[in-house]
Length: 305
Image 1 (cartoon, rainbow, N blue to C red):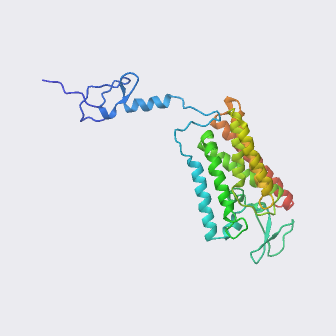
Image 2 (cartoon, helix red, strand yellow):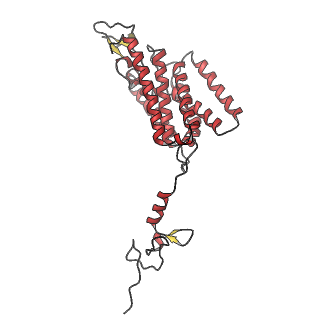
Image 3 (tube, one colour):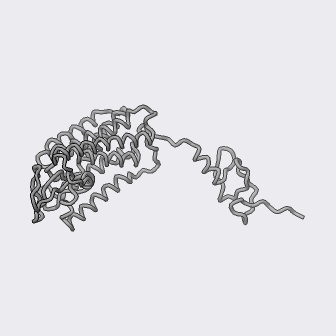
């Protein structure tokens, strides 16, 4: 009586005489994976991949095989979608823009806040606990009927597309997104500290943070800085000129935050480039932002909020 032919351990109906050189189980052609010696089964390949240390960039991010800067594209799409929402419902701008403190009157209009409230007038803005404005304002842009109008959005998206792709490729998606959001918040916080009665919108703070990161990254990698310095000089010149019609405070806050965050990622000792340590650093920075907001709120309201 003849012995039954061996079958693949994953496909019992398929006869095979090939064994996995690692676990010695029979495998069919569909389950074979080429190895340096013989073939491995699917499970042994997965186990081997888990035991191999994933390559990291000098900034601590995992080296990605993907070529598409998905986070940059997603941020651009989100900004455009929010802008379309503004066109349909213009009141979104007043509701979610970066605004430190204002008085909303019975007529719905906003008035300057000078530390006192009056019957029928309500305190509005970050000073009244609307901290979400520190983030949401960075995804809004000037409405089409404004002087700068849609060009505000187009300029920021063009800059985000050009700079964001390069920065995302070096930092990795998670760190890049964290840098973008921290720069946006940093710009909003400086607006609140220096111009609390100004309503501000735009992704410029985050974009300036990416520009600073672009400069730090090239310096860390030892690239030729001549062209990068010219690029950065142009951005700084734009920050000065745009102060005539946009928020220089938001630009400067984003620039400083982006430089600080990327410097920490780029020049920290190797042992401090791990994910948990970098998360802790981001939490500390957010804590400093929160302290600054609380102190400013106390100064504006006399400690009443």
